Image (cartoon, rainbow, N blue to C red; front, side):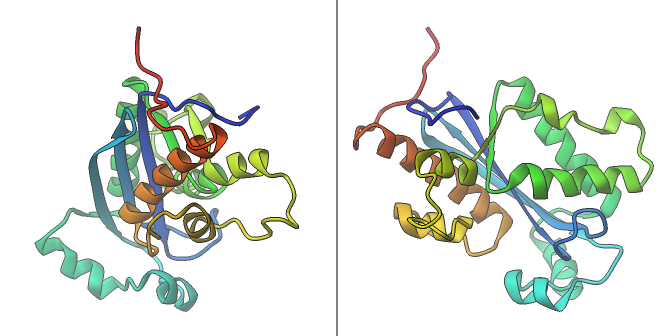
Length: 207
């Protein structure tokens, strides 16, 4: 992302995960969330869960409130996968959205969510066909975009997704993958409006 955005692409997909911990090389995603917007309007949101092959750290559990027992109980109302199947399902969705021309939107999405997804697949020894080239994705990181809009960390020292939601008047996702995925797109839309002095209806439409 080389400059601040004054238009948004036709198709945006928020992406977020909740995880067993913070180390992308050793921890696992336990939920994946996707939120689809077209022309700045919310279209759909989905979330599925993963039973991890390692313990959920106490710190992570305090953030998102998920335990193995709660994830097991989700089977009555949501999809619940094993680790490999969940990672492959996430890749399939990302690939499908990419092929449709979508921009993937998130907060620290490359260094955390996508990095953990990539390391998970690598650790399981998946075939190349189950991977996705992260470098090929069209990605908008709302934290990086905010730093382009206001580089001074003295002005805005804390730029987590929660802080950005509060700054831009967006409903906080609450550390739920689907809600945080949607909040990321809502933050981006408000950032674009801010870049255009409050003007809305700034979505890039096909000619």
